[in-house]
Image (cartoon, rainbow, N blue to C red; front, side, top):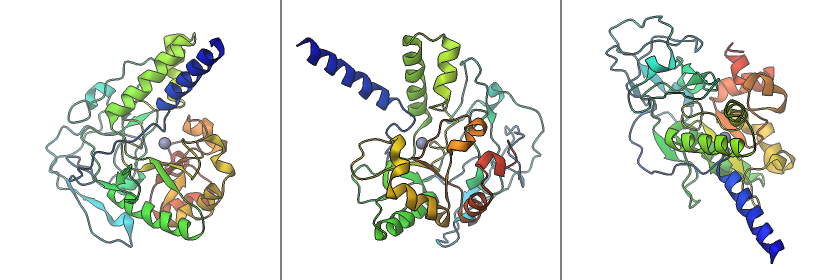
Length: 306
Ligand code: ZN
């Protein structure tokens, strides 16, 4: 009796940990009418390193050029009539809009990422959060699955192409977690902080440890709709040993052909500040993905942010 109680408690604990991991279940809200970028104007930005104040009257609207062959043609049409200032923002200066972020976590003080000329190269991490009002247009990736996991529309289209190609080669790239709202991310992040505190860590330590597994709200590319956590048949969750499977081998060989990169490689954890995640794949477009594969650079290195 006692043993079975212990087992039950252990299982409950494991279930709780899984639920709060970075790859926790996605948002599946089906409505997706906004374009990739709304209400976010940028001049011809090629660097994400400096952020800009965008309280100006930006009326930029992303126009979706409906080419299915050149996924990076989705560009921002800039109609802003004001100049972006070079004021160095703090987290508080970037608040407002649909997604306002305040970071009351010790050691966590990201600034707003600037949307680059190619918006699929936006880099969010512990240092950069998504701009306020950044709302991707969402689309279900693989409609045949009941979970209806979504990504940004172009990324979703490319994922489906990649999925079909892998399936034809005998590998099933099951979409597990795609788009995730910042509210969901916040809940996941803070749950893990509490778990770490319960394990005896100080609050600051708990935050730091949590951020290596789950990025703070606004800082995950899942909220940009550009990341997918992938599993395979027989896996009920994302797993470290995914990198021993034929699905992972297929991704390593072919994902770049569809614009996806392994975002948190084992040998780049010092740069990404995120644990090795063989399941987490990021859409950046075919050209950049190919360049990163050839060069061996991770996204931060490719963009000159590392
Ligand atoms: Zn992920």
